[in-house]
Length: 488
Image (cartoon, rainbow, N blue to C red; front, side):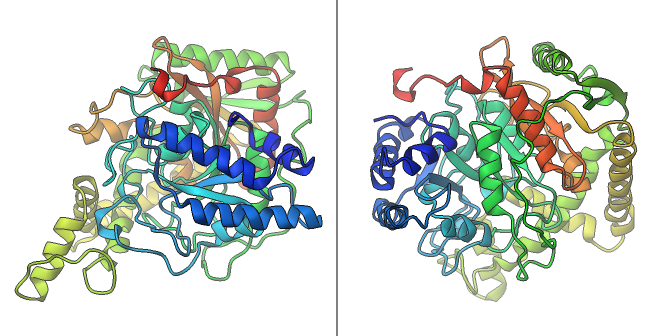
């Protein structure tokens, strides 16, 4: 049984008929069953459904009608609806919800012939940076199980890092693909806002949420993105799309590439070992002919309060639909309608979700809307303007993903402000709607992975993937794998 393949390697094996989709799915299911208990990366598998999809993929491959992704296994963050699967968003509120429909992005991958391995763990309703707020328990970092995998897509990141799946889908509202990718030593991409349909993705903050691929390599992410992106009339923010190959420039040399280094990203808050890892990548790019220029993003420090005001406001609105009436958790005991609402929500939501609902309701309330919400919206525009000014001087922006390597389990649970501050380098992209990605950049002093962040201008995913691929072609950080979970 070999589950160390990249997505591209899985595809090559299937296309060459060296393995069947059914055999590949069985291998991964067996490995998940044997090793997942130590990590809690997967919270649901349905082997009958998985093998049925694999059998259908084998039929397509035999007939010669498959795509490059046909038969390749993938896991989905529990935020994506899929018909016939429980889609709980890692919350007690939706623990009994079996989706009657499928998210557009999931359907696109199913149409390409990919095989569903299961649902991965996450922070409840994607609210968190550690995957510790899940109703189904914490997920552990496969490199050191005493540390978090990051969040909110921590289950997806841990599953890919531990080789329980060759790829996974995550969502990024304020860094929730890039930060766990960094903490687990894999590659993760957040596309331009509107590139990937949000239909069928449980909403946290609608003007921030964006689905993206998580895999071992940039090449894998490019293959996934090709299938994921489409225009969707059911999503009012979906962008008009003209078909393109996101991997078209992977092999292009980096001579003359201008890489911007934001001075605000390299201040006192950055851990020394993370800085060293980032500097290694900078030197590697210089050797490949890239030029380094200094840029400034002066609103960086204010992006955290702006993000949490706006995201919490949207969360309070989006989560108001969970009232115990139409679907979701309903309290067993109540005496009137008001009690049914309050008891159902009190029992259904966890503490972090309640905290953000309360913050959001407060900033939207009469008397505070102008003082908080409106000012945060103005600041959001300033953040976007800062990036556009920076891109006048460079092609891509490079910096850290997080100030430190993955923290220990429990260290941020009682200090939510510290957890919020860990998003300092990621939330500004979501405020501006820009694409960004994380890829492995070595290791911290304690042996945990460190990621480097690449930021591009709107619709420049192909450029980010090119730079990431060239880094990975000239380094081996992305090839490192954690020890087998039960061997620790």
